[in-house]
Length: 163
Length: 289
Image 1 (cartoon, chains in turn yellow, purple):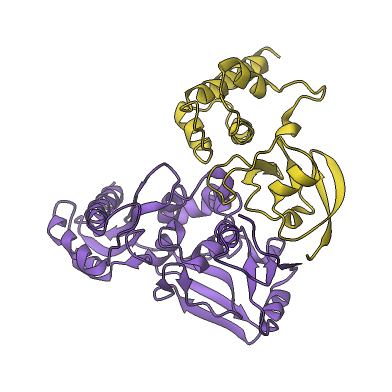
Image 2 (image 1 turned 135 degrees about the vertical axis):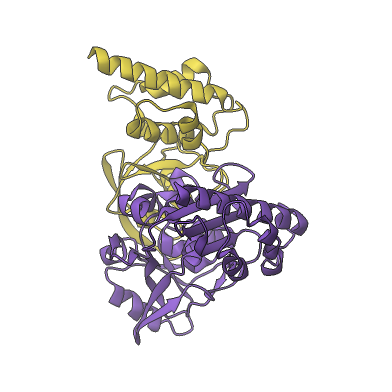
């Protein structure tokens, strides 16, 4: 099997790996870097479970080969945690609103929602549904996920107003 | 589903890409840009290239520029950049409407206009808009540069008239100079962002009296390739907002609708007529404002 050496910057940390070019970014994150928070679902760009940030934009990590990510910054769901390792406000809202049952879609939902909130601090329900439209959830009917994003947006706006 | 093994080259210039394509010999060498069509094809083993030439880091292949009578798009321009572009919303409102229906934020962040066109997915929105507006494509090879009209480029589902040694570098989409222009875009899909079962795009120019002087209409998803409705475009000249319903049936003659797992041919024909009608309605109303 052909192998190449690449250095990946994931969650602020550089790691040099020897991998085959055909390895997708999601497999590399999970199997080589043991960052198993990112889930691998359909492997052809439908389900959104593998969403990660590439240079601050959400992408599907099953539709990118790891070798292509060299020279870019990757942030996974683990990278959304607060610096002390506690859950971020968005992750906390997912907990509080029970925005998951099986949890399979959750990392992708968090990445898609965080991207929306970074761009739009006061999203409408339609904005939220559009932002997570590329992420399939088979448990929740999406309602609690929408509520969790709304809760986070409200708390951030209040925090900004008070702070 | 994992892609078969391949060699990977990260290209740094158009010349390097053309040389790599020209030197392929017996190998199949494929360009990878956003990968949003190619990687699924590779995962399903419907594509099995020996080498992938990554063009994502080639700066000269990305960018949107206003040239007055047309807007040029580097083939590697991301769909997200098109969605956010003021040039596109000001100068090519039909493209702006089309791109909102392309996939999801995660796929638009990677997917490119060039990749969307060269793959020839019949349901893709950007090729439809480019076809309606009669875009010109710039293709490069070691032997030189070729200009090709987009009408005729789409052969069949996922088959286009690009040679293995050619690289699509640029897409030029004409900007109409008419005073009163309107656009409409309608799509039916299972869910927001899913592949279009049928999509229709229309752009019209109106005279002072509200009659159509120029029309560009295309349909995607209904047939194995996007289709420009030349017959309907011609028949629409001289019509006004309430006077075109009797010619909508012309659509049936230009669309060879197909049955698949998502919809029957008859359903596609009916939806096509309806969506084309709505797109023209919107376009005339917008131009009349």
